[in-house]
Length: 370
Ligand SMILES: Cc1ncc(COP(=O)(O)O)c(C=O)c1O
Image 1: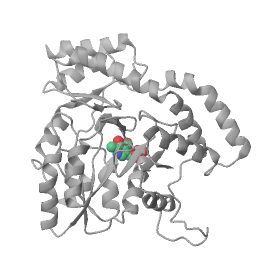
Image 2: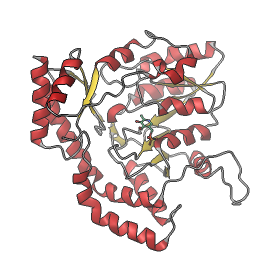
Image 3: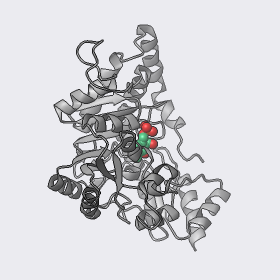
């Protein structure tokens, strides 16, 4: 059994990809070819956002958004310590400070109740709070109503890190149209992954979109040789746009298939382990199927013995990772994240997981917790 099996999916879209690659090889516009604008139009329509701009990675998507907001040294950006490193890395890259806020024990997403205290703490240390980066962890949308309330009270922007969550729905709105700006990743293992790196930013704000469009290509202006701001080389490849276009054809159907797998797992496991909560009105895209248990060691050993792969996202919260030592945080500062990091693990999840595989994973877990 594979943790993520992309081969069944590839069979469905292979023909379209082969034809698309041939078309790109024929026209030769490998950089910013016509496939880029075409897929951006589809992405914007899918998410219900005014603008979708593709870029090289999800990390660049986050970085471009922060650069468009002119985030700089002395600024504080509030985010979760229970995420992939890129969420906070981009803040540090711009010389601003990632200010961590602990997570909710049931959703594993940033706990909005704790944001205000962190904002005040940052101000006391002489920092200027500028924005919040909620993460839709494992595909589950963050608690946006409460996040926006704190954001408005403090004049902060909300940059949704939907690198795992793109395809998820928050109270009837697709991610991409919820945050002031949203970052998505098309890394191969993501629910909407391509065959290499890729990402996109989404926003309804015209001037922010213009800035990000410029930042994506070295801060370009209307004159090709007069760059108007400092930017990056953040373009998406034309060949990957072909893959993304093919995957978008089946994405809605795959989201339903992921939900079916998640439902089948949770029916079997809900009394044996603690599952990630799915609050009313929120639809996860199930980038990962994760659970916690004080018996994690025994469960993971049983799964390994049965030939079932597992993964741990994330064993070390960011405030305890070496790269962020300079922030001066220590063990005990974010107790919910630290406890969950010890007890969490993920099991195979993809749209084509068979009933027999779901049963094998579940029965190994159920017998290990007995
Ligand atoms: C929460 C989160 N943020 C950011 C990223 C960065 O995305 P990428 O790998 O496309 O740069 C990822 C992807 O791994 C992620 O999971």
